[in-house]
Image 1 (cartoon, rainbow, N blue to C red):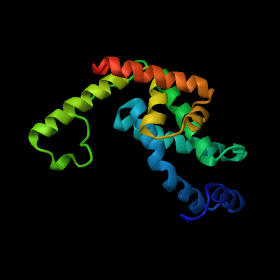
Image 2: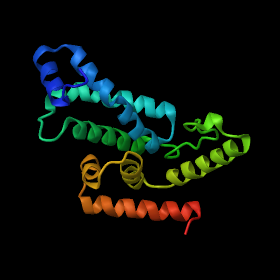
Image 3: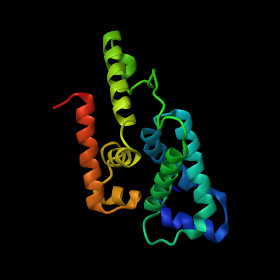
Image 4: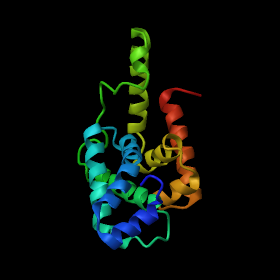
Length: 182
């Protein structure tokens, strides 16, 4: 089912009610949704929980998808809304700082010095991301980390491209300041 477009999988699911079609959509998008959420919350457990919540919301509102945009755009909008709502509801610090970030890809072949330097760098970046507001963090996550175009990211954030451009600019400026780069 990898060669079937998202919209056709949705049609087949709506027509037949067979979960295998919806399951194919989940398998196709779950990695990207989680990868989008994690830099926003900077916590594995929260990212896993929110990813699950996103797909539960999608299942509950699949009949509301009208096809006016790509399924992925609709899905990523739900993911960002869910994440923003989570961050607003959180009564403690917006992001919990992690002392031990996960291993970086290829990090297992690093020397001990390189590993320590990498961990310190990861911690600095994490702390700098923590300090950004959710809207600025979302802008940098969607464009710089997820690689979305400004247009796609603006749709996911439900804002004008000019607004998103400003948010990316502000996020980069603040990150440079906080990471001590000129």
